[in-house]
Length: 293
Ligand code: GLN
Image (cartoon, rainbow, N blue to C red; front, side, top):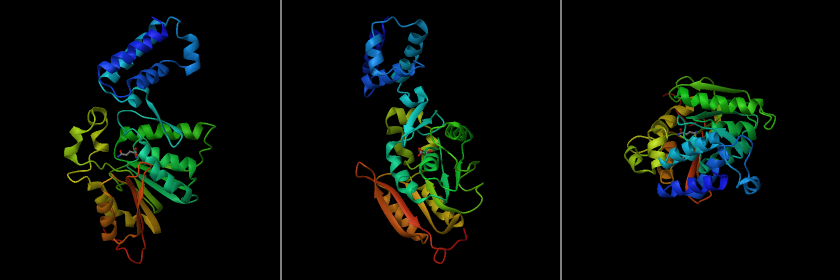
C-alpha cells in the first residue's frame, strides 16, 4: 500500500465514523506515525512509495482509536498551548485555546512574583506562565497523582530543553485544592472543573467519554470549586494578591458575586477571542477580607 492510499483509507474510515475534520485528523495521525517529521512537501515527494508493514499497522491502530472518538491529542500524546509543546494523556484535560486568555492576562504582570496554579492538570497554565512570565516561584497543585506525573514530565522537558531557558523554581504538590499548599502567593490562578454534573453526558463524545470526569465536573451548579477556592484563597494570597479564574462563559456573574461576597476588590470579567466571558479576576485587600476560614 502506498502512503497516498493509506492516507485516503484513513480519511475514509474517519468519515464513515462521523469524526469531525476527518481529513485533517487522518493527516495528523499519519504524521504521528513517523519519527522524522513528515511535512506536506515530503509527503508529496514520497506519496507513491510503499509503506512498511510497521507503519501501516501503527496507522491502522490510530485510525481505529480515532474512529471510536478517542481525542486526537490522546492518540498522539501531544498538543500545543501558548506556542509550547505539552505532553498529554487520558489523566489530564486537553489544554484548550480558550485557556490561553488567562495566561495572556497573567504572564506579563507576574515577573519576579509567586504564582500558584491549582488544578494544574497537564501543567499547561502554570508552566506556560513559568516560561513566558518568569515568576520568582511557581507551585503546581492537583489532587491526581497521574495528572502530576504528566505535569512533571512537561516541567522536565522545559527545564532540560535548550529552547525555553526555563529557570523558574517550580514545585509540584499533590492534594485537594489547598490541602498541602504552604506559603503565600501574589497570584493564584486556576481553571477548575466547572461543568454542571448533569450536562457532562451530553457533551461531545471525545469529552464525555474520554476526558477525565474529575477535571470536568464542577458539581450540581458547576460552581463547587470556585466556592471552595474563593473561601480559602485569602489565607494563601499576599496583600493585594490576585485570584484569577478561567470560567465557563455563563458563569461570570456568579463567580464575580462569590468573590465580592468574600471581600475581593477590582473584580473584572475578561473575554476570550470568541467574545465569550472567559476569565474573572479580583484583588485581595487584607484590610477588608476576613482571613479566617
Ligand atoms: N489546568 C488545566 C487546564 O487548564 C486542567 C484544568 C482542569 O483539570 N480542570 O487545562
